[in-house]
Length: 150
Image (cartoon, rainbow, N blue to C red; front, side, top):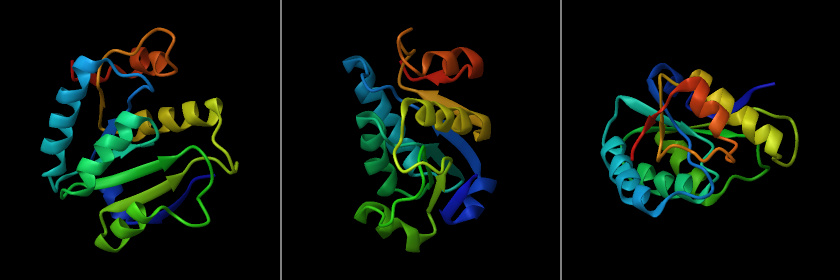
């Protein structure tokens, strides 16, 4: 059951899925933030991510200051009250929040299904680097062949 809040017209833009593992190699951080700054300036795209890992949250802070659309995909049901950063973006029509699970808490399984949904819905996928074999992103890397920034 997919539910959403915000500007659903963002789904018609060119969607860039962004997935980052919990641990990103230090050499990947600067290229990832440079990428975020350049994408943030584009009005023709929407970046789709769970924005749950630290790197994804860092990217979100740069995107929020720009012009691009932001599609935030939750691996759980919607929060009763959204964080202030998200609430500030909703009136600008630059944010769409999608819930992919009816559960109240995100689990490893719902996070994987959320990431799979992001890959399936995106026109292109970007990761900071090739994920380690132990990463939950590793199977998605092999299936969807994302562009890696380093």
